Each structure stands twice: as C-alpha cells, then as structure tokens.
Image (tube, rainbow, N blue to C red):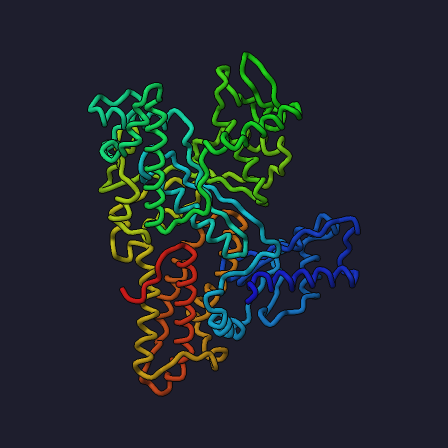
Length: 554
C-alpha cells in the first residue's frame, strides 16, 4: 500500500512536467528540478496536505509563485485520492483528499495487515548501529537506559523501511577503569580498603565472593598483575550481566566488540600506519599526532602518548577501519552529549582513512534526570550510589520505560517521573494508548458475541462522519511517520503518533455509535467495526515498532 504523501507527490511532479511540456512553465535545461515536498498544513482549513513546489520553482523560472501554482493546478490530473488542488497565497497549493477514497482505505489497511506502515526505501542500506556501550565496570544504571531504548527503537524503524541493520555493543576492556575494577575486587577479597579510584558498589563484593579459584590463583601468582587479571575476569562477568539486563528489556545485539580485540587483531596499528603513510600522522614532543585540524577539527589530536600508550581516539580510529571492513554503507553511533567534542576528530579520521564522512553519523543524547516524588535521584557508579536498569524494570516494567525514553527527541533532556510511569491511568500516556488497543479488542469481541462482523463493503458511502474521516486520515499517516523517522534517524514522533491515534479514536467512539440495536443505524455497525479493526491494527503495528506490547485486555 503506497503512502498517501507519495501518491500526491507523484501527481504534483507529473503536473510540473506537463506544465513544462506545454510551455506554461519555462525552466532552463541545465537546471536541476528540486524534489517536490508534500507537507501537512498547520491549519486544517488549508487542506489535508500542501506543497510549496511553486515557490521552489520561482527563482528558476523567473515567474511569480502564484502564476506557477496556477499553472501546476491547471496541469494536475487529480488521482482518485485527491478531491481538489487549490492555489493559496503566496504560492502554496493546498491538496484535499476525497472522502470516499479515504473511507475505502480502511479495507486497504486491513488487507495489508501487519505490513501496514512499512514502505520499503528504494535503496536499502547496510547500517551498523552502535549503542549503549557502557564500560563493563558495573551493572547498567538508569543513566545508561536512554541509549538502550533509543538505539533499539532506531534499529526497529530502520528495519521497518527495509534497511539491513546490525546492532553492536562496544565495551571498553582495555583501560585503567577495568584495572581499577580488578583492584577493587582484590581489596574486597582480601577485606582491605577499596583503592581511591576503585568501585564501591555491592556488586563488587558479589564479584569477590564468586571469584573462581583458578582466577584467584592466576591473579596472585608470582609476577602477575592482580588488577589486570581480576579486571579482565570481572569485566566479562559484568558484561554478561549487562547482556542479561538488556534481554529482559527486549534489546538484543548482533555483535559484541571489545576494545582489546582492536589491538589483538592489529586494527589500530594498521589504521594509524595508513594515516602515517598518507602524511596525516606526525611526531611531536615524543607523542604521535593525527592532523585532524586539516579536516575540520579545531586542533590536531594525540593518538599515542609520549609513554607509547594509545589514547581513546586511537581505538576509535581502529574501530572505524574495522567496521567499514565489514561492508557497512553507514555507521551510526549513539553517544552521550558530553562526547560532542569527539565527533569532529572521528569524522576527520573517517575521511583520512578514505571513507565518506557523510556515511558516519553521531546521535548525541541529552541527559536524563530521574525524579521520584519531586526529588532527583543521584547517580555514581564509582561511589556505588545508583539505581540499576533491572531495578527500574522491576518497578515500572519495560513498556512504560520504553515509552518514556522514546517519546523525546534525542537532543532533548528528560525529567523521568518514576511514579507517573507506574501509574495505570490516562495520565500515563503508554497506558492510555494500550487501553485504546484493548478497547478495540473488546468492541470486536462484543460484536462477535452479538453476531455482527466487520465489513468494508459499504464503507465508502457510510464512513463520512467528521470523526470517522479525521480518524482514518490519521491512520493513513503511519507509513509517513515511519518513513520520516527512518530518514531523519529520529524516532520520537512514533509515540506522539500513537497518542494522536488514541485521542481521535476516543472522539470517534464518543461521537459515532459502533454497536446499536436500532435497525436504521444497524447498517453502520459493520463499517464502523471495520474502522475499529483498522485502529487496532495501526496501534498494534505502531506499538510493535516501539517494542511495546499491545494488550488484548486491561
């Protein structure tokens, strides 16, 4: 089933081409015609859709936008979906859908079933999405949760339009923090004070208590580095726990990559040597530097310190090379907003390695402030003062957590009210949307018990009430909502759309009697039941994209 917006775009593009062929619109042959944009007007009286195509063409044609708009309207062949195309100042074309066609789309949606809302892109890409990637020095906390939800939702949306997505978790097992974790386990095991830079959480005591004898023997053998040996073991135990927490959340990963593997497999060495050969690496003050300022960064960056130790940035360079070697068309990183300064240097590294910098994207997520009863909950993994993701899920459940994290743009901060997320009332948006789906199921069950079945046979003539038309028009938006989310790599409009469907369904249910004993009104029941079924389908598909359940009863 084609997107309504695409149907209208094709009609306007055909009108533009016909106006040029007629000579009503003159465009220089060398000019590249801009893509026609179809938008939803802010005000309903301006129609269902509008286009600014005339204003886009005005500078190229040397004509007033109103004249161009009139020429386009004169040339347009209205498809079945369109009732009218009207010129409006200063050069818009307002497009209105034909009510009978709108009503007919209920049958089209039901025929599409679970595939409704998924319009494949013309050129699917192989996309690697790296998200969460918290250091394996402690359990996932509430502070890590946003990346898990946003990353998983982004992957689901990209897959919904046909992209091939690989979910990847990158864990840092190669730094001082992991060694400090090992020394913290050592101190707990020996009942000694935790080192100054160590970790104090109760999970450290659990690690020490469950330390295998062979690992303890290796850590305490003559010449061994206890921090390194215990840190490697403890970080792997923590990583396994992180994987279990994510599985409870419904988030899976296809690939788990460790920083250490980039060095063992020499990805970092080879990438730095490639940059050195190209003249993009030099020595100064005993350190090795990358000429990132040549490619848009504000200064050059160190890749090997004067003591020979690699920087985090060196690992990033090797990781870029390793990822692209696997044949991905696009890399997406979801990082916290405090990584803003590292984006330019990584983009410069991608370009210097010979990759298209436009094929690498960083989505920087604003922080989340967790609130309970008006009081902010503090977080410090090192101090051992934090609420784990598992504890949050046990309290509010994965559905509410997914909704609240997914309902804001990644760059927008969130005040996450834990008590509101727990509440089972219309104040809680995910409850409100799920209840709308459950109500649809209840109506359909009641109808079956009364011997009334949904039918779209007379929908074109019967589903003309303003509340019915408004609801169907909103249901028709789902393919565009999913397509836009995938194209923009921003997914918060999907929960917003679910809320709007639930709101319009509530108005429809209030204004249009679905099941009735009145013989004169009975002919509407089958058509309205089909519309209820379409609402159920759209809510189920939308919630499924969010990874949220669509309950049968509530």
